[in-house]
Image (cartoon, rainbow, N blue to C red):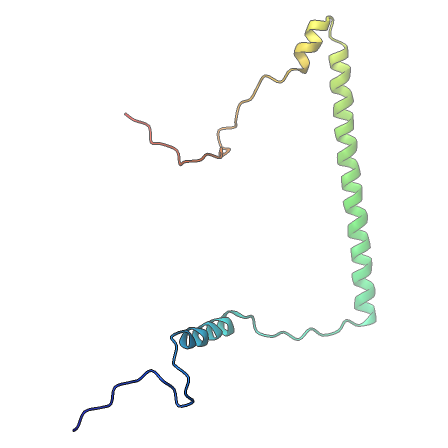
Amino acid sequence: AGRAPKASGWKKGGKKKTHDEGRVDLYELYLRCVEPAPRTIEPLTAEQAERGEQLAKEYTRMMWKRNNLREKDYQRKIKLKWAAIDALPTEDMRIDALLVTDFVVPQKKRVPAWSPPQAAAG
């Protein structure tokens, strides 16, 4: 007589309750917590836009200058290398100079592997 009725699993609208509804609400709450606060970006004045454009052009100029100097240095080193190889007295020495024989991996460089390194037995 004083017993509470069993929950039938049906909503008032006649649709069955699902467990996903709670997850969706938690997901939306999570997204609201993770989203950054909306920022208002003030439009730039004409002076600020002009200054930004000047800085961008100067930055591009300096980066191209640096790149050109680096490329010039690479080309100089390549020319010196070939001059040194051509200055060798015999053809065998020139061939040996072109062979790369040192495949040493630096000690601090990590070598990719399929499995973690094994501890030394000892």
